[in-house]
Length: 407
Ligand SMILES: Cc1cc2nc3c(=O)[nH]c(=O)nc-3n(C[C@H](O)[C@H](O)[C@H](O)COP(=O)(O)O)c2cc1C
Image: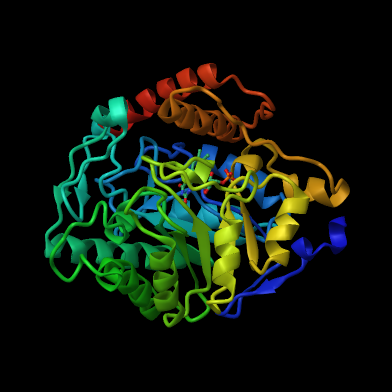
């Protein structure tokens, strides 16, 4: 029970750095950057809540490695020449009360909104299939080998910048349908060269990035990878593929693999699949993590659907090193403290049950993002936000941010 639970025990990562407990704030894109796509007052206010939430580790929302390819409006980007002062302040706030600060770094590939007018590149020119919402997304262009090397270099440069800014580590985003996932999945990677075909080839870009980040950053810099346990689409990236990738990552000294799943097309990270796989009602990917634990030495973390201490504890008891929480920490940023005071306290994950699954998924995200903005404005969060009103507010916010970022 509570404070003597394994959840509150420290954990030392392979690089030698210790997280004070097993509870991790997982990445959530905030869309709250200041002008110039850098962190500013709203993000600082938001992260102060988590910094004081007794978490072992706080992972930022995804930070882009290329400012001309953003996952969304109001995003954060960190390139080789970006002024790191705002990032130094961000890291300092996150670490101010003992949590480790990890920056998630990402490239969207084809998952780019047309309105953002950004670069949409992908291993193959396969557009996103979001049914009647597909037209919201840009048509991707197939990447040249030069583009692939450029992306690799950018990930490495961003990781180095994160280290310079004082972050304890980075998490390379290879989940949820973004560029590195597009390389991993045979549905989106139809290349015939050394970057496509076998899982070894499809994983080459991720492996190159990880090994180069390891080479240029300090030995005790934490390197994590967020990986899909599968993409939950027919003939897509399978669990066997995931096991093979983890096997390769192990040789590179990765500190943690965070297991998630899905993409914009099949948002398994919200508990929905497109291939009829049934996910657990809470801790969606625990079964996959259990199956992987005995196959790898890499510490595992799983995120998705966790809002109760009992379930989080089960994740650790089943062999994961860390447990990730996202939505529940948007509504209750001090959930880790609340569980210490009241073990049975249940966090909240907003859930929209609309029939249009794509729209419901957008509403789920909108409800969470609304809470992030409220915390960024030092307002209390809402326990039961309206999906429709949250969606409207989210659209207005995104429109304002799009106008700011792209005119
Ligand atoms: C508003 C929002 C933004 C998100 N942004 C990211 C992101 O930037 N990077 C990432 O890896 N996952 C992102 N996620 C997914 C979460 O990290 C997590 O995998 C997913 O929400 C399932 O966990 P949960 O049930 O605890 O929310 C986001 C989720 C939400 C709700």
